[in-house]
Image 1: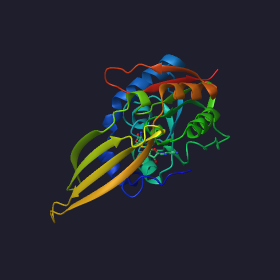
Image 2: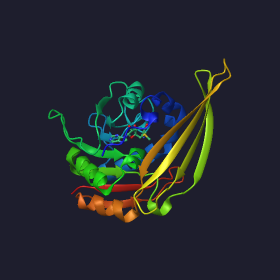
Image 3: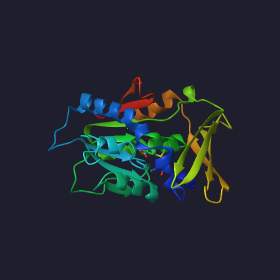
Image 4: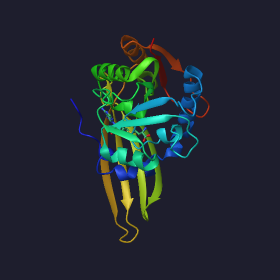
Length: 259
Ligand SMILES: C[S@@+](CC[C@H](N)C(=O)[O-])C[C@H]1O[C@@H](n2cnc3c(N)ncnc32)[C@H](O)[C@@H]1O
């Protein structure tokens, strides 16, 4: 069943560029760029690799990869996400970006005028898939967008084996003259199921009135063991390899390749 979208991706989406700016994604994007070249060749200016990101959010990964992002990107990208507010951020960062308001589990190609994609990326948005059935649907959807030999990158924040229960992080910044302080807390209320919870607390201090608004935003996220990821990607038709993190890009990354 579709979950109600967290506030961070709806009425509080204006916070996203301040909580997790594009710079947070630089190392992962560089790692992706290296892998794209390694597996597909360098691409050319006239025929750049075509990449679709499912759950592209604010485009903070894509802005590094796209030729139009102003950061030396070498690819042509398309963004899909459930949240119109997040896609609006992405369009602001990448001029001319094609966006689709769509669920990654069910999105199918709808542009017969365009060739299939060379690669599909599902970065941290994959955390929002809660069941094995969600994963199966999403891998089938990704496959439908890819050409033969195409690549699927899947990057969950945690595996069941690496989950850091009871972890807290905090940070702060200034937004339009207000002070924003936020805490992120993750915990697993039921280790026997395939989900965990991330609770975000935002403290927004109006520097004129000196009053502080406290907002709670709960996210339910998926948690699957290594074997579930690789098995379900293989069942969807991909040959799968687990990619070792680089020094800068410490992430879980599965790379699937179609025959
Ligand atoms: C952490 S944000 C992604 C941020 C993104 N990596 C960026 O570069 O800005 C997670 C995103 O997943 C999206 N999302 C969650 N479930 C989804 C689904 N089933 N289909 C498509 N997008 C989904 C949310 O709307 C949100 O934008």
